[in-house]
Amino acid sequence: MSKGTKKQYKQFTINTVEDACLVLKSLIVPVIIDLEKFKMYSDEAEQILKQYNRKTSIPAGVYDSIHDKVLYQQRELLRFLADHQSASFSYIEVRKILVKKKLLKRELLPESNKILNELLDVRNWSFHNVQSMLTADLELAKNSVPEELRESVEIRPMLNPVIIRKVKSYDWKMLEDFVDHNKIREAQFDLILTEMKADYQSLMDELPESSYIITNKGLSREVQYIEYEINDQTPNSAGRNIASLSMGIQKGKYDGTAAAIEKLTMEEKN
Image 1 (cartoon, rainbow, N blue to C red):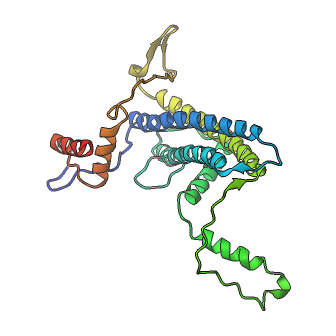
Image 2 (cartoon, one colour):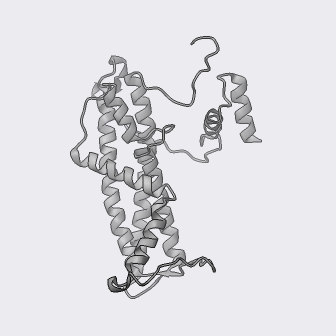
Image 3 (cartoon, rainbow, N blue to C red):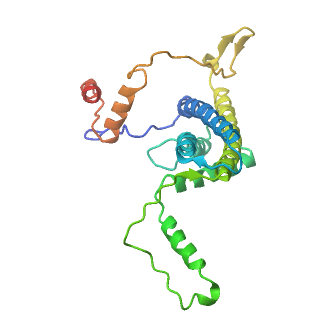
């Protein structure tokens, strides 16, 4: 590094198969955890559906609670699977990098490619306050006017008073559609996770003999996924220091020194 050149900490460069494994592992683990929660909350939504009949309204508090839990986990999964932000890592982008650098040779199933692109579209639309929502609202209002009257009727939005719509209850069909939609997404997420694990195994197969582990059947390079239970998690074990340092790096406050680490982590504690 030449004199006066500031080292870049914001982005992690993938140069080796080991780098690739580290990055892909950092995506697989949260996807496994968030997918388990997504399935748990989806099952909860289905159980709630069974508690009501088709002629019964579902209170907003009941519907919104389970809807928000499922939607949050879906957004977390989309963040790790299909995110185009330049400072982030997601499976769809990381995989392109690995293939381009010839670190990964296996191909995705055509269906998996299709699903990943669909998830990317969902992510891009749902993560933003898209301008097309306002345009769509106005276009639907115009379309609601009978065709023979459209030339003589002008659609103008009501600007005052400002109406705030608060839903008090939902039709049973709303929850039924939500449950059906979750089942589709669950199958899609399962397939993509299978692809991620297959990619990881493929990368591990490229590593030297030191990557072998000892099993009951001898040496093996087959990836083992082991659950480790944590009781009474503390702020530090939950990754508070990592998050604090990461935020400092994003803001350009980290220069690679121990003093900078101490300052950034102490600021969070205080």
